[in-house]
Amino acid sequence: MTRISYLDTARGLLTRRDSKEFLFFTRTPNGRGAAKAFLARLEEPTKNTVDLDRRLPNSRLVLYPDAGHGGVFQFHEDFVQRALEFL
Image (cartoon, rainbow, N blue to C red; front, side, top):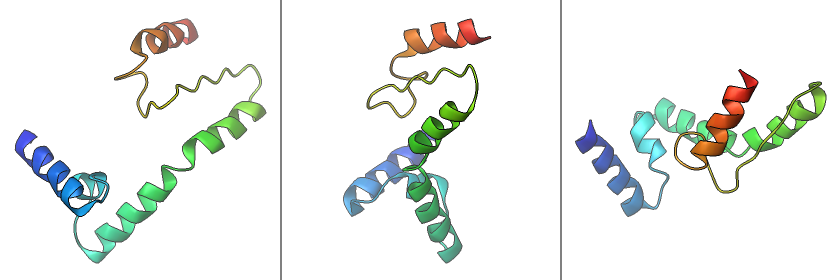
């Protein structure tokens, strides 16, 4: 699995495309279309999350700057603390 991940990451770098296209989708027309739609949706979550936060009573939204997966890789101490408080 590691070898495939490295190869697909390199392929993304060499083609100047997002490596997620190669890591998660087939290279068929359907797979390429799904990858394009997926990458477009990645631009929406924060905007929709802010709207959802505004509509839900007692919600608490925390956005970590420049962190795609803040709780997993960056800001993990703050994220875990907040998650435990929520639970």
